[in-house]
Amino acid sequence: MTKEQFIALGLTEELATKAAEQSATELKTYIPKHRFDEITEENKTLKGTVKENETALETLKKSTGDAEALKKQIETLQTDNKTKDEQYQKDLNELKLTNAIKLAIAGKAQDEDLVAGLFDKTKLILGDDGKITGLDEQLKALQESKQFLFKEDTSATIKPKVTTSIQTNQSLNNDNNQTKNFKDAVQSAIQAQLN
Image 1 (cartoon, rainbow, N blue to C red):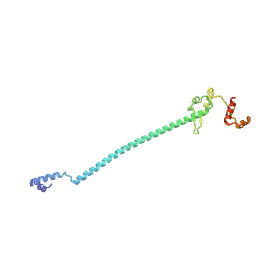
Image 2: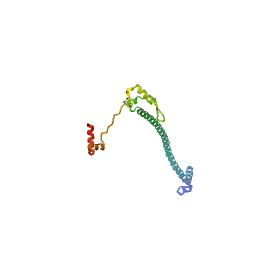
Image 3: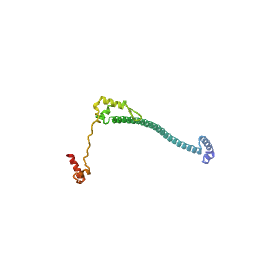
Image 4: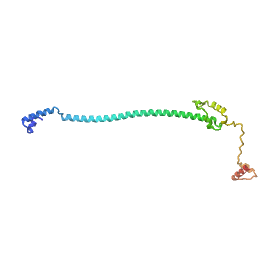
């Protein structure tokens, strides 16, 4: 405040002068209202910016952490997929070998599962074309060393003659020239088989 303002308040001139001097000393550290408002607004803006930056930083940290976690998860999945693919190929080759062995001994062995278990699959080589190398050699060796596991060659045996049990309508008509229905035809065919 100025000296005149203090006098207007009712102070003596001497006290008004001292008060004005003291007031001038105080006002040296005084910040004008408009400047105060500017600083306050700037402070609010900066605080808002800091909060936004902190939020962005946390999001970035989470995002970076997620990206690293995602990268690790992708690597884990790729490794698992590679392992599963290798296991699948191994199982598929094993199945191909087993099927080829069973196909090779089908009808030849007394107990196909037992004989199939005697093959050394580590010595069998599955080619890209699906052919198996070493299968015939192992089969011949097993047939020579363990003949009792294999059946004798049955191609020389005579197959029994198969006869039909139902006579045709023509043969029934020729028998005593009588016409019979289907039921009678079946009964007479069964009787013929029993006799």
